[in-house]
Image (cartoon, rainbow, N blue to C red):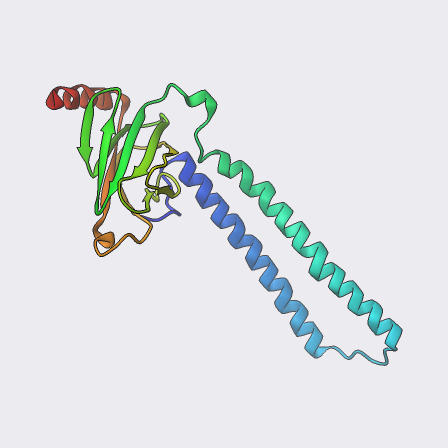
Length: 211
């Protein structure tokens, strides 16, 4: 369930974004503490009113305008490209579609083009992006598979689309990340990532079982 143990490109982008923000915030903390220590230890000497005002203005402009502007620009420059790895792309229109409808407190899963319906489980091929169309039957929920992608709200009457992809085979745990009532803590599901050949076999067998 750790977002820092990614098993897909979207989750890897999330992890890199987390580490980048962590490193940047650590750097800011070190600089602020160093300035604080310097300020309480230094001997200011004799400072006139005009000089004191100029120093104060420099700190206000530098710390109150330049630093936030540079910080926000750097974070946006780093974060926006990462965000593109988490959203569906126009070039992916022909990928596998999975519809997920949240209920209190379970997940209805269907493969509309294959005629497959499941409960609390998804199956996807490895190394291939799929589009998960998420909505809700009752209240707002949130679809989240930490090792594969970011969170996506499931909203009644509205459909959001998540680009999901796994880099390796295995079973990945997912859950509702939005408090939705007394059964929220037990609203789990799994995503099973298969090698392409194994996924094709599963798809064929599941379609036969649903007939």
